[in-house]
Length: 217
Image (cartoon, rainbow, N blue to C red; front, side, top):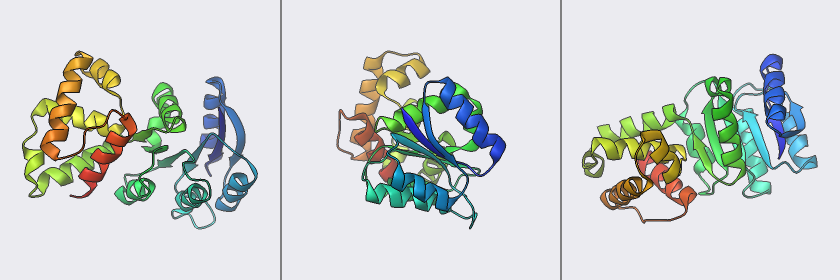
């Protein structure tokens, strides 16, 4: 799997390169600035891009904007964005086109190699990988609104909803909660019914539907 990586801190960039290579990824380019990232997208055809939100020269959201421009030029280009802090706007911009192959993780997550690599692979496969802290904030904001459907969910359904929104499949949720996959299927069916969302067998479509619902709060 071929990767373009953008991170301005040398030690973190070098560490990510070594980690990804250790898990069998091919690093096509490892760059440190927005202009370099734009050139890499134009000249290379990565299977997935791992991009820091803040890159030189602006040090604002240049990395994110470069990635979004690349996705407009090549619809569906898988992009996993890394950020120092939770910014719901970044997640919203990534999800705006309604397509999968996107992820948003806090940089702290990269220190858990298996979790980080799983997120890269999930995004590269067209899935969604959202940071648990982002989901937690969206759930909290939605729960504090005057929206009745959220209040109708049981504690277990809220647990399942949170894991679903992170991009996990029924099988992965069942393993995490140590229950049967059949039980999770029942919970997800109840969740979609209570939230008024269309049921889908496509894992990524249901994640996007849930995230869109939470972001309306």
